[in-house]
Image (cartoon, rainbow, N blue to C red; front, top):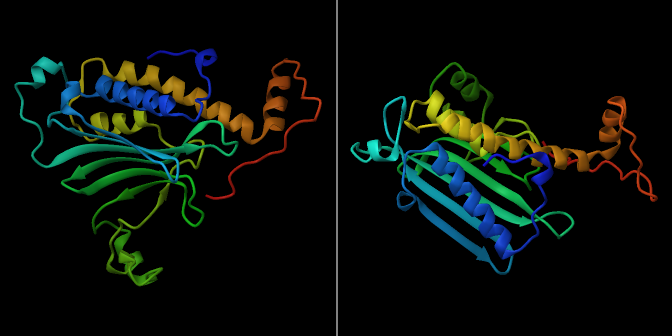
Length: 251
């Protein structure tokens, strides 16, 4: 999935774009994990009232640090405890023309509970839009949470539970990609990867970088113009003038 920056274009808000997006997510997962397509539980649905597409994938994991082919892993048992889950909710962007991510959730699960979750919530205002949730009680931070109290009646922080914490990771534009989450699963956590997974994910991540760069330019075109001019480019703004900055105001 190697793509040059010139091949990255915005997706129109349509059923086909959502289906293409789901296919690309599946291709990334299959490049990283030694599984056949039939081993992924896939779901794609659309809420006709809200216009939100919901895409989800669930997959088994294999114990054992290292890499294998699909055929080699067919002789191995999958994890009895852990699975991988990826969910996206897609909607139209602020212009109403293009597809954008409203919510994403990448997690390692223990049955139905998340052991760790990389989450993005576009419309959140009071917590970091991009964050990581850890599960459990323990470590050096729990005593502080117990002493500092809860933010609401249902907040588990008072009990030392770290799972309600939203650990910020890069905001709307610089949040972790699916490829980086899969790197974490394989390299950091030690679940088995597919032969060639790292090269494949690095190639795929280039597209993500370019998409986020384009979005960042739209957030503040004047800064982009200044950076290009410092590199020797001649940049001509539109006749109506340089568009104003429009970054998200939330964390």
